[in-house]
Amino acid sequence: MGKHMGKVVGVTGNMITVDTDDDIFMNEVGYVMVDNKHLKSEVIRIRGRRVEMQVFEMTQGIGIGDPVEFSGELLSVRLGPGLLGQIYDGLQNPLPIVAEQHGFFLQRGVYLSPLSDERGWEFTPTAKEGDTVSRGVALGTVPEGIFKHRIMVPYNFYDTYQVKSLAKAGTYKVSDKIAELTDSRGNVVPVTMAFEWPVKRPIDAYEERLKPAEPLITKVRIIDTFFPVARGGTYCIPGPFGAGKTVLQQITSRNAEVDIVVIAACGERAGEVVETLREFPELMDPRTGKSLMERTVIIVNTSSMPVAAREASVYTGVTIAEHYRQMGLNVLLLADSTSRWAQAMREMSGRLEEIPGEEAFPAYLESAIAGFYERAGLVRLKDKSLGSVTIGGTVSPAGGNFEEPVTQSTLKVVGAFHGLSRERSDARKYPAIHPLESWSKYEGAVDQEKVAFGQQILFRGNEIDQMMKVVGEEGTSLDDYIVYLKADFLDAVYLQQNAFDPVDASVSTERQRHIFDLLLEILQAKLDLSEKGQARSYFYQIRQKMLDLNSTPWNTKALKDLEKEIRAMLEEKKVGAVEQTDA
Image (cartoon, rainbow, N blue to C red; front, side, top):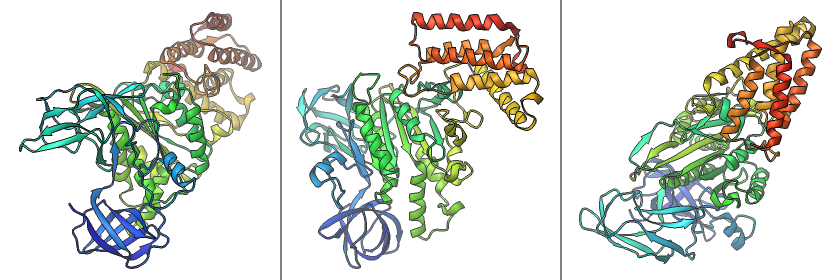
């Protein structure tokens, strides 16, 4: 479709009303011309000859009669080698290059190529002339960091093709032609290393979608053991301000067993984003020993940027994640925060004068959130390899109220819920995931029967704690008091984790299983403790030993010696074992 024109007849915040006689379609991109700049915008409603468009820039200076040029294209991102290590805004502008060319303050109407057109890539063909190929099938590879970036038949090539010609091994730029394909009608179409794809359309160039089953190991004990995440699954982290959502995401991105990390900072405060941008290049990737940024893509759209671009940033992030999934890689997308994305939808819905839903959010909030999380998944590609996108989104409910619409809409579609607690964060219990309110539908790394016993201890310990607040310690039986001490012991030595300790910050699956088995021996034992003061002293001593154990490197003599000391302390007081139901 060719380019069409229109003119501005109304402006409301970041929304403009445009009059046009041409055929326009939903989500088409247009450019408002003002002050010799072209401001990018997107069609969000069509009513006869008039269309409403959300402008991704500040609308100051736009007036009645200003011309609008429609591109005939959907809001898209450019996909190809060179995405890794980049920092983009919601419209895929490379922010470091924007800052270099235009200064640190963002200028309106500046849109740069997201991929370098000058860099050379070492292309190695994997297909050959005469092969029959279709969308998503690799024609060759180029090295990108520690991965082989597949140069594929573009996802918008819906026919079946024959390879007419293919570039030989050598150095090429992303805009160079590397193949010619012949379609079923005999037309010859060129292929370059990079191509465009609409961000709001899921990439579906795979053979089969599978059910997520294998755990995604984050190396955070409370997640992997009690509230696991599946590879290709979804989870959310709701919590009040300051409870540690962003820090937990950074720990996960550093230590999780995934290939690529995509971070979409959607509507976050600029200070937090700056902290992320400063820390990530300094973080050592435990997988490579190099900077973590080499296998990370960051999409930045802070709360000080135009509100309309928040929505685009979430979709830009998930589209890039799906692109790397098509290469047989496991991708983790971290969206921080989906609440501010929802707030952007509420603002645009208000300007469109739509009938509001609960708390003035749009009536389609639930389906929009579901549509985003449904883009996660484990897929079998056309070459039989597996790729996955795992989506973890933070939610920032006002006042930590989990009953508000965004949290509730998210809970209906995710597979795991890691609810952060103000009470736990104030008590410096990190990660501040509440062990009694959180849940997961996925299988974890530790045997579920063992985990169930640990959860029984936690629930029963909480009940006794609530009772003690009423009747006091002296009104509690010794047996109940010991269960309370066991729950507190489990919380202190397993559910809490020191992110700044070189050993405790990242705990392998093997170590988690081993430590949890040792904990179960202590939790299941019937102990010879005759009075509460003795019980309190005993659990304090054994807790200190377990905390030392958490900071001791794996498979060392020091670790084995500590285990012997802990087992000796246990045997000294052990008189038998309790049944699980006794907890």
